[in-house]
Amino acid sequence: MKSSRRKFLTSISMLAASSAMPITQFDFGMNAKLKIALVGTGIRGITFWGKRLVDEYSDILEFVGLCDINPGRLSFGKEYTGANCPAFTNFEKMIQDSKPDLVIVTTKDSTHHEFIIKAMEMGCDVLTEKPLTTDENKCQAILDAEKKSGKNLIVGFNYRWSPYSTKIKQLLADNTIGKLTSVDFHWYLNTYHGASYFRRWHGQMESSGSLWVHKATHHFDLLNWWINSEPSEVFAFGDLEFYGKNGPFRGDNCRNCKHQSKCDFYWDISKNQFLTDLYTKNEKYDGYIRDNCLFRNEINIYDKMSAQVKYQNKVQLNYSLTTYSPFEGWRVAFNGTEGRLEAWMDIPYYKEMNIDQAEMHEKEMEQNNGETEHYEPIIVHKLWKDFETVMVEMEKSGHGGGDKRLQDKIFRSVNSVDPFGRTAGSRDGAMSVLIGIAARKSIETGSAVKIKDLTNLQPRTVRD
Image (cartoon, rainbow, N blue to C red; front, side, top):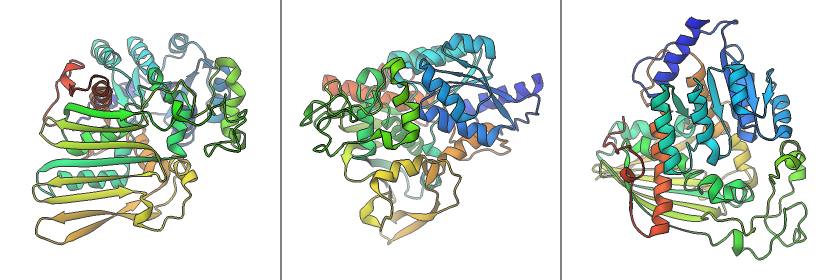
């Protein structure tokens, strides 16, 4: 048992450091499974990091504890995941009693640092959902705790692991367009998925750090990884002009709103039994409303955002995020000294799409291990030549196939080096949120913000 745990600790250390060394097989036997504890039994916690681990990896791991401040969600989460373990409302007691090897943190963004730090102080390695945290002070505290404790932290960035994102990385790493000079990246959230952030705690700055942090951390991590450098300076604009106080009317929540017949955003949560059982039935414990009004006055995050980011290797990034688009998708273009690379996902004008916009995010989140569905193009256009189209074999569910690849890397045997360096540690998590934090500060001050002024991390010209 001690030998197996030593193998795990070695492996998790290599993963957190994005080591170039081979990662040895965990090789846990029936009596020496990896012991996992989960804190935060919301939807992401009990689906992707709960039920999927139970269903797919029970031969090598076991849950020894689940924790949440809401006893109703905790009880439902335990039943839903199928985890045969004790449930706790006190985090420290869970760690003391269950003695996990690894703690998975899927709580509200603004509380990530509390559980990451406490778990490491109590002798556990940690895997946290994105974002790492919500401000620079919490970020520094996490970095200090990791160094002091000697434990390791992995950030669950799944977007790197989709075949499409990986192909972009490969093309750039192979200098297909020469030396990279600039990037344009634009993400569009539709009026179903985008609106959902404003219904929830994400719509309040003190809980999510804004979508600059909660959502854009995905995008900035991809960009840091693709560009293979770290950000040095950020200048940004942002405003709240669609949701929140800008709405024509408001109510307590969608269920009880007298404006249901007039509101284009009316959403009946009672039609979704899973969300009803997880959230609506447990509001009495902590007051968390899952179908809050999109136009409530408490919303104080931005709903339109754009930023200019300068990287340490002199690459310039032009980024934007729209939260009320008629469609959900993204576009990216890379300019280099020898050409241009263009990629996109789910832009309806580029092909005939047979999926409804209301179902798009739900399909993306499904964990059904489906077969490859289709191919998507990446355009490579060399200077002085005609463009070429690179077709990439795709999956739709589980964030484009990224979810299962991420978990396989962490929990299954890996006998060869990942040439793309897709596993993210604390530095990766910090550099992605620091762009969003800097953007937020830039909007507040009207000035550019240097990344080196936020924590003790000094941006690197080459990230690996």
